[in-house]
Length: 327
Image (cartoon, rainbow, N blue to C red; front, side, top):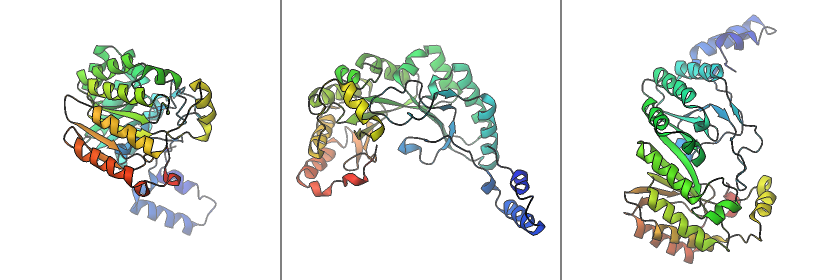
């Protein structure tokens, strides 16, 4: 809903003239107070988009079958009408014309058709003249469904950054968590994004293979990251929420033995050791799910990060309390 000066004051028709006069004066003094995008919750965005204006161009996730992910289980996937999206852009453009960054939600805005995405991107550029970056989540299948011409057109229209959930590079683990992607499709998708000049940020999940597949999970994840060399890599730690816990266990197909904190640090250590990008990559393990906030540039800060991990192994009291972690 778009809240305007008139309909807020009209809501007080039953109030006294004094009430309406005071409300009108306050709204005139603080016009931004009447501008609010009413989101369809839950709403998610990457940590690096904390200062971005968010427009929900889609609701939910078109796949929504990853057994570890509870983000959009309460939503049906919907592509929002252009009229609604345009109205929200118009409203935000009026009150926040200096917006620098925009994130297109929900789970996979890139699932929209090329023509609809270009319509949105061009309108955003017209309404926010100081705009520096437009970004969105994308699944490997979203990327591979677009041909090279379409990806090039979207980049030219202003989409600059995509966040891709790799989760794991191991095909066995990917199948067990019903990711809907393979090592091959992940590499193909990431390489196409880099080829067309996008900034690429990838997420991986520590502990996703449990104790049974920890070796394969990390070895192949490090290999995927090395072969694709994203601009950014974020490592999360598996936290199974109540809404997906049983589904995850059932789909895994065999007893899943979760990793303890020291096992997680061991996975992170192996990931950092074997991640050999062809260009500098900004690495972060500072998500709310992580046992400790760690970051740096690979390969420049590799030894410093490894030294920190070694230190944390001997000081488990320094790790984030489990009660404060969330996925």
